[in-house]
Image (cartoon, rainbow, N blue to C red; front, side, top):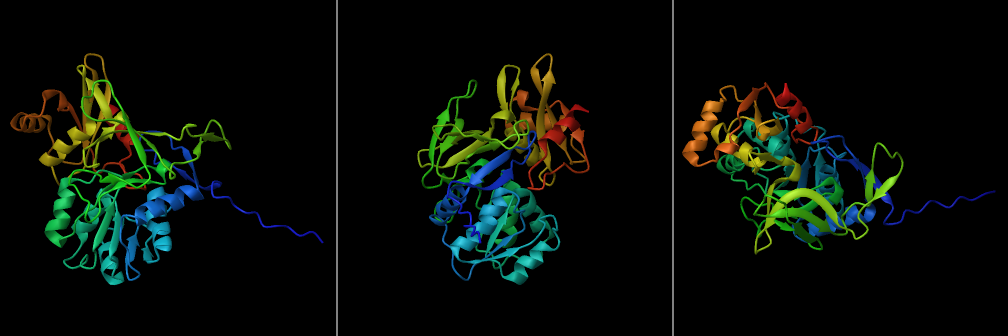
Length: 352
């Protein structure tokens, strides 16, 4: 008789392969170890205070690192309850479920939080004492909606699939509006200068929650290891103030060179959102033979116009180079399953 010993997993073996969101291109497989996940949970638990009577409401997909780590692993190892719901898109159903489940902790993205708030009835979020938002920038309009209607503060964090995923968070007692909070314990950071930008730099991080490496389509089955020194290039342009609060300035890929100047596409989206606050907007850059790149606004605002953008920019001191010269209107902007804008699809719309 042959006895087979059970295979024992080592902490640094690959525990899960998750895929990047594909916001800007083809998704990549991210090899994450048990050490990565457990380190990230421990980092979060060092900052947030949870209680056995807490219930975390998670409608985010667990095939994404945000929903998996914060929505599933965090309650398990934090020893409090979770309420899992299969889709964040059921805007009219979710507010009532939050109320009926007595959920005290809410996990969301800006897109979903805005949709839930617009569909909610008074009192649906009375039990919520803590929110954690990530995956995309939280708009001021969304913050104001939650505070005005429900008296709830939206705590914004920041991360990446490659980081299992959380890198920084705002939380009660450590909150600064307009930032994504301070880096989690145990994370080293460096900012590399970016030509053309005077503020901030390209964020590189090193920590126990950083992935083992990538699985790429052109190298099937092979784990392409991370930098041997352990540094991961986030591809994000950030600034870090004297108190350690991180401000996202944009993806490196989300800056455009227009007329010889670096323009943040996120900043352009912000002033479009200020002009049409009840609509969704995305700005992309396309090749332009005269200026190098040109800005295109893709929006579901039916009354959007270049003339209105120009007038707003002039009135509020927005540089002329930041004003898109083309607007593409659509019924709804394409969104990925994670709640992020599908920028690859939006760029195709901008070129049409």
